Length: 265
Image (cartoon, rainbow, N blue to C red; front, top):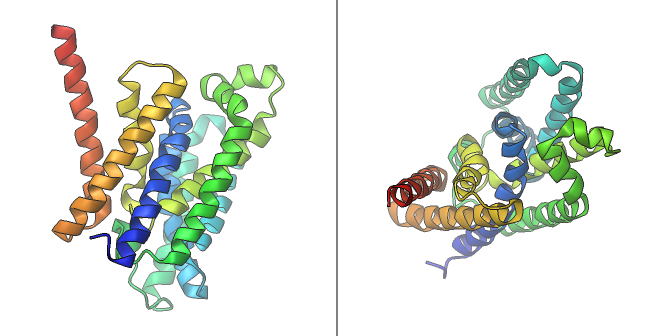
C-alpha cells in the first residue's frame, strides 16, 4: 500500500491533520464555537471553486477565501453578539452561493467531488508542502498564544478584564480555524471536517482529565480515526472522509460505554 506515492502523500497529510484539528478544535469546542468550524468548512468550497477557476492550488485558495469569511464572522460576531447563529447562516449562504455559481456555470471543468468527500488519489506533493507550511504556522501561533487562548476558552470577559487583547486574539484564532479547514479538505473532505474538529475532542472530554491531557488524548484519538479511515478507505475503495467520521463516532461511543461500565462496576 505504501509503495504508491499518493498513499505516502495522503499519509503525511493525515498525520499533520490529526495533530492540527484537535488542537484547534479543543478551543472551538470549549468556546462552544463548533458550528463556526462547520460553517467555515462549507465556506471552503467557495475557496476551492475560486482556486480551480484561477488555476491556483485549491488548498491555498481555500485558506485565503476561508480566512476572509473567518474574519468576517468575527467582525459580525463583535457587532451582533445576540444573533451569532444568524451570522453563520448568512456566511454559509454567501459562500455556498459563490461556490455553486462558479461550479454550475461551467467555468470550472474539474470534478469537485474529491473535495466534498475527500480522496487519497488526489493528494499531491504540492498539497503536502502546503499543508505542512500551514500546520507549522498554526503550531507556532498556538504555542505563542497558548495562555491567552486558554483564558478565552473558559472566560472571554474575564480575559478582557485581565488585559488580554481579545479582539486581536480572536482574529488570529479565526485565521487558525481557516488554516485547519484548508489543510483538511483534501483527505477528509469538506462535508465531514466538522466531525474531525469536534468528535475527537468530545471523546477526550469524556476522560475527565486536565486541559493538556485532554488535548493530547484528542490528538491520539484523531490520529487513530484518520489513519484507520485512510487505510480502510483504501481497501474498500470508499471516500476517506466518510470512513473517518464513522470511526470517530465509534471511538466516542466506545469511550462512553467504557465509562458507563466502570461506573456500574
